[in-house]
Image (tube, rainbow, N blue to C red):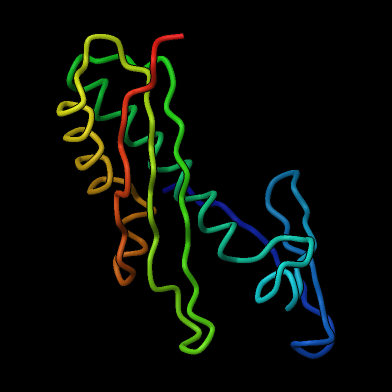
Length: 141
């Protein structure tokens, strides 16, 4: 088994307080304002989005490779929606673009749908609607 860890520290009350999250060599501040307003710092939803975008991109590279298509690049954005009234993450939208020689749009979309199904983070978020919002090939550089 592979295990990974991350840490969080929170000080003081919800609205007055703040803290840090740490994983690997990264340490970032977070606060009520960075989560529910537009203040600087990070928030759990950004971290989930980063994890999902990274995991999905790797899963897509796996699926493409299994079908003998070698991607030059895969760029994915994950947009995580938090409903503050429900205190629930209600949706994750994935937008991905790939540079994959010899593959058409239909083939790329099919590979992206397979990747969404096998992505470990997608599986972990199974209680949340995960939408593949876009999958498109990039123009050759």
